[in-house]
Every structure is written in structure tokens, then in C-alpha cells.
Image (cartoon, rainbow, N blue to C red):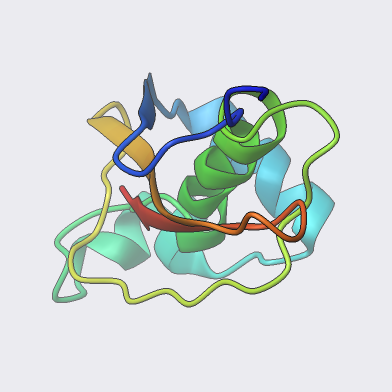
Length: 116
């Protein structure tokens, strides 16, 4: 009998710092030009006190993990739920992770817990 490819509890993580040029590139690609992400003068007068990284850019780290690490190449995300509990600031280190919660024997499907 072949060993299962994934096992409950298996994890993968990656850590990144987002730079101002990366945020500006993401704004251009996504068309999300919210001044909270791009305009330091505007952002300093908000409850965040300065520019913050787009939440969807941070969530992209989860996509990177799923497509390259766990489950890995060829995998796609079928459903994803997010809650944003605090901002990520420019240059701040953020770690994203995935953990296998359920492995199905009858189909090539797993359930992951994700976080950043």
C-alpha cells in the first residue's frame, strides 16, 4: 500500500517583508490605489498611523505556499475565508503558513488551516 502524500498536522511556512515598490506594483496590477497603501501623508492621519500593505497582497503568500509547497505544484485553492486582525506595515516581517487539517482517501482533496 502506498503511503499517503499528505498527513494531518503537516505544515509549511514562508516569511517575507514587503517593500514600498512591491506595494506600488501590486496597486498598479490590482488597480487598488487606496491612499492608505500609497500615500504616506494621507495614511499617517488614519487609525493605522502610516501606510500598510494590501491585505490581498499578504494573502498571496498563502497562494504561493499552496501552489509551491503544500500541497504543492498543480494544486489550486477551491475555497478560502479570511479575517484581517491587524495591519502589516511596509518592511515588517510577516509569516504565512498552511497546515493539513483533513486528508480525504477517496479524492485528491485536503483541508488546510491557513494564517499570516
